[in-house]
Length: 197
Image (cartoon, rainbow, N blue to C red):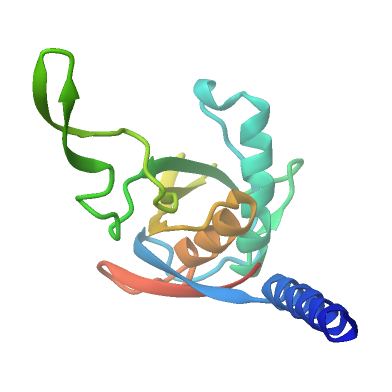
């Protein structure tokens, strides 16, 4: 009896330690990024305000802009709604997709059984599977010079992965989209960002 109680306590402690170690983990978020810029350098007063399309008036847009703010600041831009030099428009898209690791045979079955008037044979499948969720995300950043109304920077980042927390993933994707601002490398590239979970 004493040995089983100690074994139970040891198992409980191991589970707690496993859960705690899972809380302190991080992962590398790989982003496919492509950027375009006509800014030769960061100007002396790189102030901005957010610009919204008529379709972006929902409260969710305010939350998205809050997720992009840190990446914009890290890129050297300073938010100043009263006296902006630039406007910044941010977009994001999230779409659940089929995992690339999904089994084509999951949920598929063949059966043979007794029917009321003889034997029966069937082939079928089910729609729901036990696969882990998988997500395709995209973010976009457009910087426009207000004096000329000219777009001076545009960037998109895309990621596919199992990460369910948009509050952690979208800020890292905005950071990837702004990497190298105002003179990012030409052409498509991969930008990895460390994300703490």
